Each structure stands twice: as C-alpha cells, then as structure tokens.
Amino acid sequence: RTSCCGIIEQTPRYVQMQGFALMSILYAVVGGLWTTLSSHQVLLALLYGSTFFFANYGPNATTFLLPSVTYSHDCRSTLNGISAAAGKAGALLGASVFEPTADALGDGAVMLICSGISVVALLLTWGCVRTASADGDGQSDGDVVAVRARSPTTVVNGEIEDGGATAKA
Image (cartoon, rainbow, N blue to C red):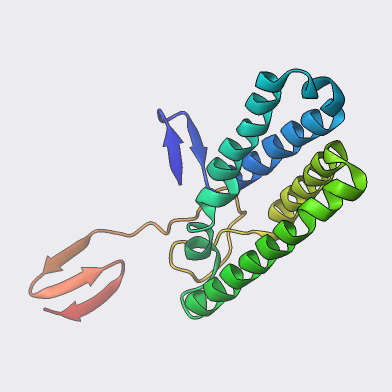
C-alpha cells in the first residue's frame, strides 16, 4: 500500500484499475476522433503517447506487485509463473492481430477495440483481483491490504511473551 503525501492510499489493485480506466478513455478519444486527429499529428501523438504512460503506471507496474499480495504463500511462485505465461500469451495474441485488424477495420476501429479491451480488463480487475492479507491466510476487501496488528514482544522472568503465546527464552 502506498500513499501520496499521506492523503491518498493506493493498493496495486487500485493503481491497475486507474491505469485501465484512463487507457480506455484515451483509446476511446483517439479512436472516436481518429479522422480529426490524423490532421493534428502533435495532438494525436500526445494522446496516444499518454496511453503508454498509463499502461506503464497501471498494469505494467502492478504486474510485479499483485502476485505477492494476491496469492497465498503456498502457491505464490507457481501461480506467479502461470500469470506471467498468460500475460505473454496475451501480448503475443495482441501483437499478432493488431496490424491485420488495422488493415481490415481501420486504425480508429482498432483504438476503439483497445478501449473496449481496457474496459474489460478494468472490470476483471475490479471483480476478480482481491489482495490477500499480509500473512497470506485470508482475503481482504481488495482495496486495503489487511495487516494483522502484532503485540509487542516482551520478556518476563526469562519467558518470551508474544501476543499471548509464551515460550522459554
């Protein structure tokens, strides 16, 4: 969980959702205004370039964070590998169909399709991604990473007391 000046607290799930939301808006604007923006190259480059910023701010940045807070300790490495492989397969599919789709439907239509895919990804993130608690035992509400409060460890008469458990020192 990160905070901006102590005011806004964000989780990887929230950052990913922000990235997808802004990408969908930018792709929709570029796709909807493609013919107009084609004659305004600087504005087109600025809007299209902004999609890369939000792709890196949102989904790309959280790719490495979400598995550590989503999956339990028992299966984290396996599911992280499966997630990475699924992401690579999706990237391969997207790169393979981008140019043929642009040739068949036009560049503006491809931008609108990208907007729709971003909306689907936003909804999938909202509905499916839940952030596990810090100890990996349970699930929190997904917007706040649950951190179990720990009582201070004390030593009393040679015994270590830690949150109600007692052991010999």
